[in-house]
Length: 186
Image 1 (tube, rainbow, N blue to C red):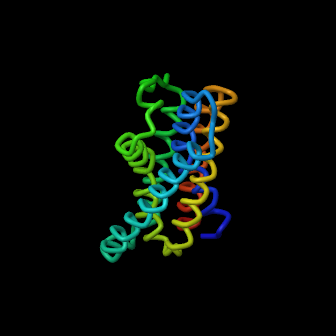
Image 2: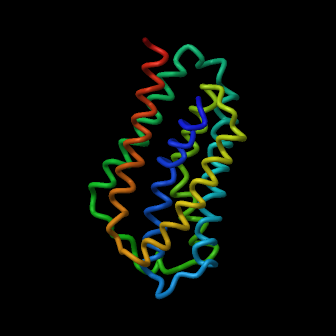
Image 3: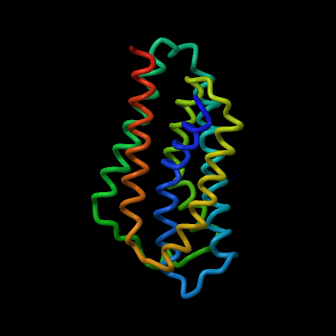
């Protein structure tokens, strides 16, 4: 898998965090580097750690599933991407108190919630023999930057970008899953 493909997956995975970051930005009267940086660090760190964890889990069981690994990678990416596309069309009503809270507990919960899909992608990476250090670093940095941007855009423009970001992220993940499947079956 090329760096460009991993970067695209990183963008796709970061769209949940971006959408939540927009919500965080909505609750701020004024965005500071500290606020944006805090959100970016939490989301970026978890988006980097989850693929690594998934990779370790996937590598542990790779021998048992090597004959169907491309189907598993396709299924995981298609389900995650499809879920993101579906959620983009649903109405989002995040509790305002949760979005305004930047405490450790709230940020940990949001970080885990927005990075669960990266765990499944990590399993896919182990089946495709991706350089996990580079991939986790790219995904984490991409999420950090897009989350910081999301806080700023949320503060400046409101909820306009949240649904579109989730839709684009889901589409990217489904597309990567289809590409992997086609490469292994054609």
